[in-house]
Image 1 (tube, helix red, strand yellow):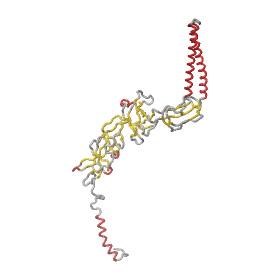
Image 2 (spheres, helix red, strand yellow):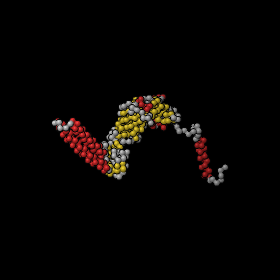
Image 3 (cartoon, rainbow, N blue to C red):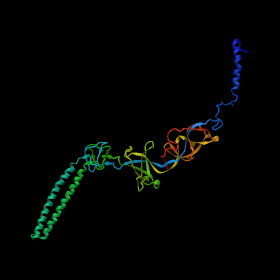
Image 4 (cartoon, rainbow, N blue to C red):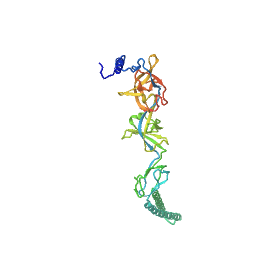
Amino acid sequence: MLPTLLSTSQKASLFVRTPALLAVFFLAPIGCGGQPDVGGGGAPGGPGAMATPVTIVPIAAVPVERTTGYVATVKSRGSARIQPQAEGFLTTIRVRSGQSVSPGDVMFEIDARTQQAAVASLQSIQAAREADAELAGQQFDRAKALLSVGAISQQEYEQAEAAEKAARAQMAAAEEQMRQQRMELAYYQVVAPTAGIVGDVPVRVGDRVTRATELTTVADNSGLELYVSVPIQEASRLKTGLRVHVLDEAGAPVATTQVSFIAPTVQDDTQTLLVKAPVPRDRGIRADQFVRAQIVWSTAPGITVPVVAVSRVNGQYFAFVAEPGDGGALIARQRPLTVGPVVGDAYLVTGGLEAGDQLIVAGTQKIGDGAPVQPMPAAPGPGASGPSAGGGA
């Protein structure tokens, strides 16, 4: 019995709508099997499944470089550390850091007053030796004339001859001493041994310098060489002419050169061989810079796969390829891969794929093994085979 608070019209409306509500309540689960029916798809590759659009690229073998990377040092064949050959107090500094100099330019001057006094003293001694030699020569000539007329004995003639030779020897010794002292005097002016750019100047006017004092450096970046220390285990593979890539911070080659020198002996402390290669000019590389270098051991056909097309599960690498299914439709198949090092933005594949396979490079997050797929145009850019840059040895 309905509550007496309802009016007659409200009671009639309630009895009209109640059958419809009951029908909806009891009919809704029918045919659903206790789960909401999302329609059509079912399991991947099952009947009625819709093909997922993916990007497919054919795999082709491309030349791949087998390389090994090292940390190398750039040295300049024209660079020099400037050290004085004389000792004393600096009186003049004629260069500044960053200045360009030419061979023979005066860079520093050292107080040379003591050396100048020594040279002046030797000049006086040299003048006296020259006078002695001239007198001895005159006496020898006179003795020769007297001996010819029998005015002096043979002994006196020989004594005059010996005196003349001794005087000339003393004069020659004085001249050599003067030459040495003048050379020493020239050392009080420190000149540039080669053309280049002046480095840091750590000394100041008034500093006392010795032959061990480093005044500055002169660097010439036009003659750079790459110094690579290669482990002795790789010695059998080394040979002149091997290509060497110089890499930037992103790993892209900025210069390519060739091995020009292999040291004949092993460095005791590191058990490595020194390998040299010239560095091309105007590549933004400076002397004493550390760079990444790759020695190219060989080049052979190989398969590379973009990193974005490869997934890793429990340490195993996988990729999807498109294969013909029933009725000729394409389906996705998951392939386990054996991969090598990363080559640019791709893996070097050593097993699991062959040239001619149809690699799925985009849309893999929406498919599973056996799922139907349909090809879409590949986006512009590098293909599945990736760059032909080097991978690890």
